[in-house]
Length: 203
Picture 1 (tube, rainbow, N blue to C red):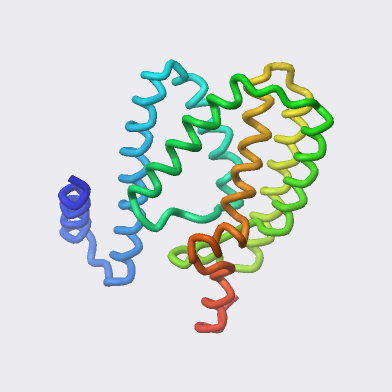
Picture 2: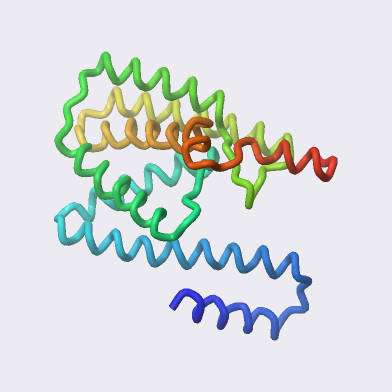
């Protein structure tokens, strides 16, 4: 199904625009990401409905998306790995967030460490999409720290247990996804922009 949909889309694009091979490769990569995101969301959303946590699934996904957008992070190398990890994240974490009670002191400690780690390792790019421009990297880092800081404050001040936990856990999850250790465990290259700059002399 994936190949069929992508081939149809690429044929339409080729027939309407005269792009070179590099541009076509970029477009195909983007279409693959969109296809995977849509199909994955439908699948996990259906599971969330079965478990009776669809509202919590949507809320946590939105919270996490805002956190991930400026700080990026590792992507699974295979579709099945992406589906499994996303299911564990967007089903498992909301379930935990619903029932887990965390003392405010621990929230402050965890939150402080999370913001520090975000400031050190964000944004974390991938070899397929290196963040080459120095100014963009700086902007992404600032935005990441701001979002993480706001999330930590919200996790401490909000009375609703699920929302409080969700803001904190979204920040924790993103810390895992941008960590050099995670990249090393999954044998993924880290700080990919450095290799790109060294190769092409750009920044």
